[in-house]
Each structure stands twice: as C-alpha cells, then as structure tokens.
Image (cartoon, rainbow, N blue to C red; front, side, top):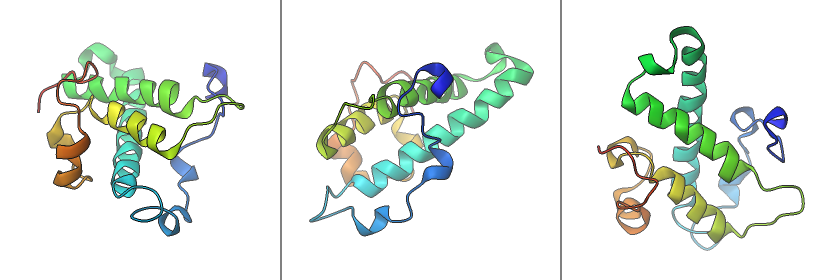
Length: 133
C-alpha cells in the first residue's frame, strides 16, 4: 500500500483486530458495525485474491462480478484505508464510507450483513452500485 501512496499503509487482512468485538455494537458504536466490518473484510479479501488471478489470465478474462470485486478492492484502499496520518474520521463517517463501498456490490453478495441493515443503509441507486444481483 505504501507504494500506492496509501497512508497509513496497513496490511488489512492480517491486521484484523481481535479486540474489536469487545468494543463495537449497540451502546458502543452502531449496531451494524460488526456486519459492515465483516463484509468489507470479505470483499477486500476477494478482490485481493482476484488480483493474483489477473496476473495469470488478464482482467479481460474475468467475469463482471470479478471485475466489480477488483474495483471494490481498489476503492477500499483508496477511499477507506487512505486517510493520511493527520486525518480523522468519526465512526459514523467510517461506517457511511463502508456502506458506500458495499453499495458497489449486489445485495445478493452481502451475505455477512443482516437484512435489516441492508434495508436501512444500502444505497440501491448509488452511483457506486454497478452490478445488479
């Protein structure tokens, strides 16, 4: 991530906080926090795995779904991880940014999120939403 200019250049996949479950959810952050975190993590992992496949077969050989996950991973790094060292974001702003990213994916891909949160926060007609489920 450092070579892409993403700051802070944390390696997200092995950096999953083991302490997070103690400090999130109702009364602490927001009810959807855990679901959003899990889905973002899964989507980013999928996109990262697909990057390796692109090196072998090329991006044009991938499906529309796969290309959406590649775009998701790129935007996740650029818009979610990238904050700079001096920039702060509230938890509500962070969760909103997460939902904006998740709105790129079809609802059918959001299998780690409770349906009630999808109904409340998913932006069906978002400019980010590219692929229909």
